[in-house]
Length: 288
Image (cartoon, rainbow, N blue to C red; front, top):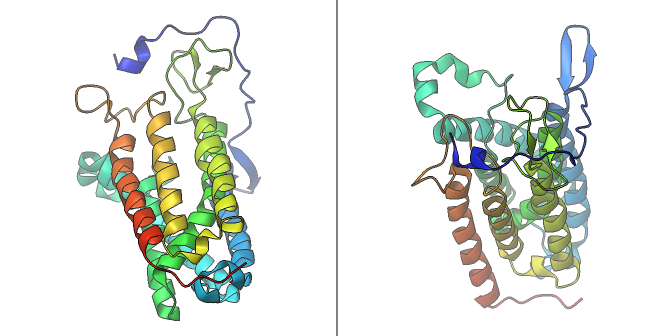
């Protein structure tokens, strides 16, 4: 039995699961799931917000955003591909490689889930760097742009995880525990998806919004990307203490670390490096 399963399940006071159908709507035999819509609207809303940031040239270092605002819609296409491909490759490599080596055709089967946020993040970063270099812009500023808008997609994705009743947490006696219909034990659990939506999505968005529009952090290339990386990594590491690990991996290194925490450590270190670099490098910023 895993470490998290040893907790005493809640009795009595729990929050009711909304029991929303994971399928948003169907057109004949084609079913459109909330999870797919979360990806789609995460990219579209992120692109819309990115467009507003790019148009406001006074926010950026020397008044030069990484690329023109109108180019954001071309970049949105790159973004969608990079998130899906990176997320899937990341899941295959980090979470279930032996299975996919034995069943290579299953690599392209995403109908049953299997996406890594860390892999999607790496794919998104690579797409941002390549796209910006093709436009002759500053790739660090491109990473800042991604850091400013990525929280929108993360928020929607975690809400979709909650609707799917997946990636839930350990048993809890707290009054906001939720009994998920997919849980074979039918005990109250931490709604860890909502924790992540609140921390990695909403709270981090607000922090970065203050950084970009109050402290003009986009004028120091790499700073916003570093803030995002630190905020995401700390939030993910914290929530992983109450979120159940993937069944095929379980807990690692003596039963107290998860793969999500291990993959978040390099992101945390990278974020710290970016913040130090951005804040110590002389920048000829515009005055507000």
